[in-house]
Amino acid sequence: MKMRDGIMLKKAIVRTPGSSLINGISDPNFGSVDYPNALTQHKAYINALETCGLSVTIMDALEAYPDSVFVEDTAVVTGDLAVISNPGVASRKGESPLMAGHLSIVFKYVEHIKDPGTLDGGDVMQVENHFYIGVSKRTNHEGADQFMAIVTSCGYTASKIEHSIHHLKTGVTYLGENTLLSTGDLINHPEFDAFKKIEVDVDEAPAANIIRLNDYVLMASGFPKTRNAIEKNGFNVIETDISEYRKLLGGLTCMSLRFS
Picture (cartoon, rainbow, N blue to C red):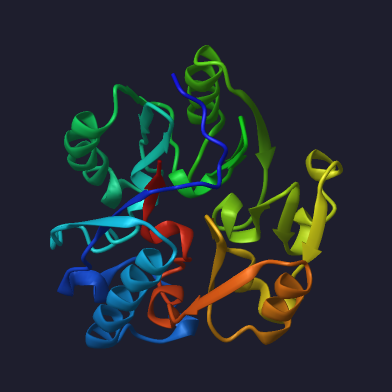
């Protein structure tokens, strides 16, 4: 299986949000979802991916699955390998088999996380040839162990990180060039001691979830301090508004699968 460098990506898969999005898993403190605005933001997100040099496949909406716009949770993809997840929330378990049908055409090797293991793709961060797997309310130790066994058999390395946030990549993401963007308890986590870190202030915590795409860093709009810190470290930034998706506990990485 061909290793990827974690940065130079050419393709993305997204799924159009259905009108049932308004019934997705949400935080009531963030307010209700404005579906027309969510559609507008999703189109802008696709445009941003294309600006970063990716060819985007747009899958049809799945009205039966309100959270299905967050395709990253259904699989982890790298090189010739797709690992189909087993989401930790019962209402989302039907999404992964539907994504598996598409990925089996695209990827040479397709593996599956099986019960009693659970794993959300948002809990998996790839840094070059190493995978960090977050153990959380969505991803259990059994699911993380299954994932580790799969990727290590393919020549990658992997380690587990227990955390208390939504997904691992809610609080830490990889910018490339041995640099992490992180917030909260993950800033000083010993697993990340070897990295250069750009710290995200608590008042801009959602900005810790970014995507490095070729020559650009794609980030959510509305976080000027974090943008300034990223740019000061020599990265080119593109912003896109995902405020409707934050109401659903979603971030930039959640909304696409990206690969070479």
